Length: 265
Image (tube, rainbow, N blue to C red; front, side):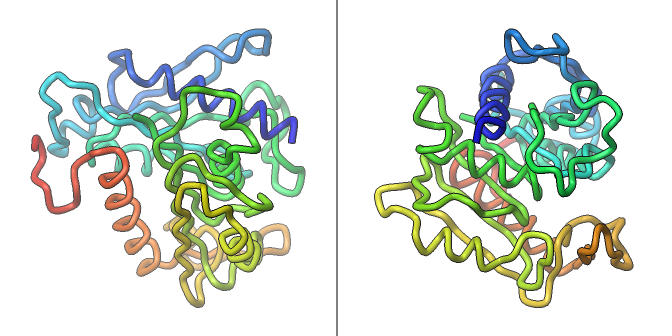
């Protein structure tokens, strides 16, 4: 609980910082850590709709008004190229996106956190995969973290998370996307969490893909592979469907452009 609390503190601090700044899209960046924590600065990947790759791809213009934003949290294997792919995709949809390197210098010498529990990681939505998905859920649950802050995320997206919140009371609409045969994070836990969520909380939408495994959106996992005893495999239909659902979910909750809306609108 203490680790998850500190992770979410950092995520909320990042959310506040996304509203400003003019760093170019698709660039490695550094930003302040929480006060009193080391190192002083953390690293990540920042993509903006108005510059860099997104602009070259025809990303939308917002006419000088602030863009909605997403904080992207990687899984236990750490931040790699797939995080940049997601950030660039969200940026091309009209969202300032910052991917956080949670396993950088603060966890020196540790290649990943798989099987080790949560690390001391580091108008905005939070988006996470696997371990990052679990953190995203904690960040919007009232009893876990959100009760301590006035500033809150407007939405949360969790790809194949570990669903461990009893009697969840979400403070923002939440979208969970997971495979039916996920061996890493069993889908039944997510079903139980949704079934026992408190009615006074924000809605949780659970999408379960039959026959689909963990990391179903990572194209590098073609063919699939077994890692630490768990099967990981890309599934193109599920990945594309999840992408469409995420885009519609962000548009509905952050006011960003929908899939059929031309850039610049």
